[in-house]
Length: 447
Image 1 (tube, helix red, strand yellow):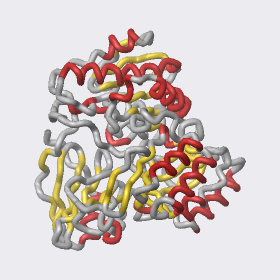
Image 2: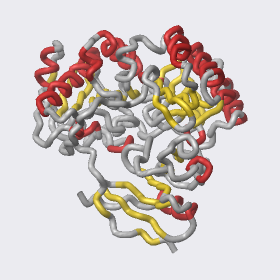
Image 3: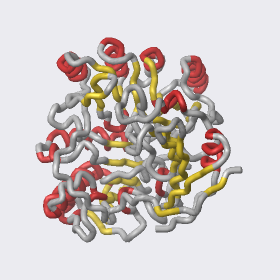
């Protein structure tokens, strides 16, 4: 019989934790490669998760010729290539630049922008935030000061449906009805015109950098600023020529989590959202097709099965999936969904593998205590599950989730992270523990 131990407070990511960062951010990029046990790793930022058909083809060729023949999808909707050789850097950068995937070498690691992947496809959102994504990316790459942002600083653009607002953005935009948008940084929130949204987001990043300089602790993200450290978002918006009105608590909470009247934390929709929140389910949605990648990794063959793109656009999601918009009719969308199922994608909303992710694990990562991808098991339930080979828990979900952590003795610890608490789950088989945790009622927060 499974037994849940009393809840204990979960580590907080809210503003107030103030680590001292005495070194630069070493987060990998497309040009700054990371050395792992299975070779070099490149992480390619994809603002809004957007790729053209040509870019999809180029990444497939890079994975086949230069890497291990697979592509990994991150929790920020980016793409990683692993198993790269020592001499591949020049050829890889040339391929990416020629495909328009490196608009600026100096800015390539700071182009961290999440956006609602169904924006503009199903009539639910209040704004096509993918248009904001393109403009914000151009603004980021046009300014030299933005290179001071860390590779972990995150912009989140929610079209009002409540799908991405709770994914821990440092600067969060939430579209409203009537053509306005709420921009939030930490506990501050202002309402601006929708046309000013990208400039407001950039101003928010500038306000953070100024606050981090004043704090002197080398903060990489808003949640790392010391308690009481002021962020002059109002001044930054005024300096950018953006008219803004302060809105009260609850519009956008700390770290980008929305409060009452807006959207819920963890990507769940709240009272003000126009959609159900959370990841798009697999299937046909309007004239778009949504699929998920098993454990967040696909082979080159599976990657190429995404082609051709009906609207020359692929959207990579932060839930390690893909949205293909622009099908002419439902019939053609369902035909493509069937072919992607044959290619090995998750296309059934009832699949127990949905929401199950894993870090790289052995043998690719020296720190991992297990081959977590081989050990991972499915489990029915709504909460996401992440299998981790070590305590770093690389790539784990934001918000409420199930933590399956390798212990080094061939076993795993299963813990429910929900409502601000952690609840270890014991007893039964590993599969039973995961399933029970995924279906457990969320415990009351004990902060």
